[in-house]
Length: 237
Image (cartoon, rainbow, N blue to C red; front, side, top):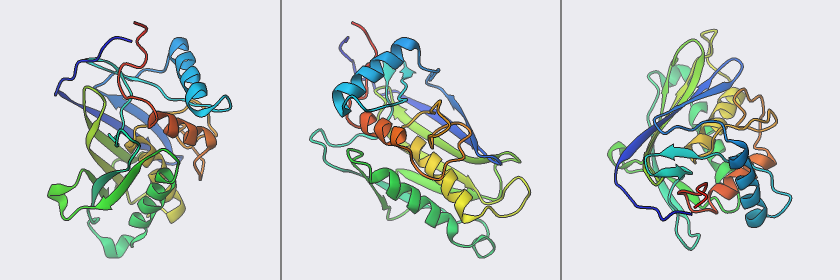
């Protein structure tokens, strides 16, 4: 593995969830292509040595200006928890749309952060200016899109700020129900903590996921992400 040189440059990652049925596409200023055979083999080896031989993961690197990185929130070197501050921006018409939007996000956060090793706590900020993550709701992103997550990271892959935008209306123009809102939130929070897409339709992070809960592969992938150093893991030298 080559030594890593820290730089302070920032990069923006954008992840989009499409609705009806829920599906996802990813765009990024970091190049995050599908993992190569070598990438997959290295991640399988790392999962086996870190989590045990039964672990199955889909972790994939992003290519930053400084090399291969695994975007995530920085936690304590001793495994201590990191508190990430959040701000919930109210929808334009909360009376019409109700309060289920916030419930869905809180449910999703509690599931991902309950995974052993994902040492994150999300706490409401005193105000929007101090929040590291902003959740906001709009009537529709477009006729097809139901969610959007944007990261700002440094070139080591440490996430600094993020915005998650969720839709209140489905493609038919009607308010989404709580179950659908919760599924979209589960997928988006997976991206928020740093997960890429999975190639297995049984995972929550599959691009056209119809799942209602986090799979074991989702859990293993999140555990591996937060167990490893975030930079240049796939370099051979």
